[in-house]
Image 1 (cartoon, rainbow, N blue to C red):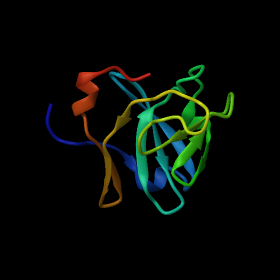
Image 2 (image 1 turned 90 degrees about the vertical axis):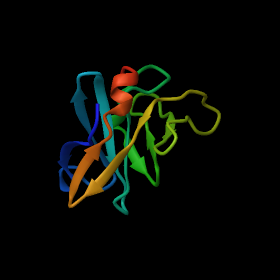
Image 3 (image 1 turned 45 degrees about the vertical axis):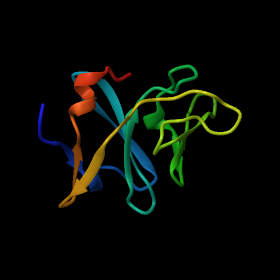
Image 4 (image 1 turned 120 degrees about the vertical axis):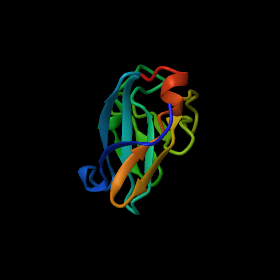
Length: 111
């Protein structure tokens, strides 16, 4: 599969917020930080599969709404004493649009 997939406008995601993008591989959480960095990862916490897209974004991390696990948005790794990992996806902003790299969608299944 080639070419990046246009999934939304940057403005569709509030700063320090997240949204779900449904793909053929499953649900991906897309996040926007206060300084307009964007990140994409599986929408399931490695702990109890909580919906990360509903979590609180702070800096470049998100806190799961179920049990307060903190996930690094860049790496998908749990921070602190918690251990676990979620898959990340390449995403970029181009002319105000969010573009998702479909390559990993064909290699793996999202949450």
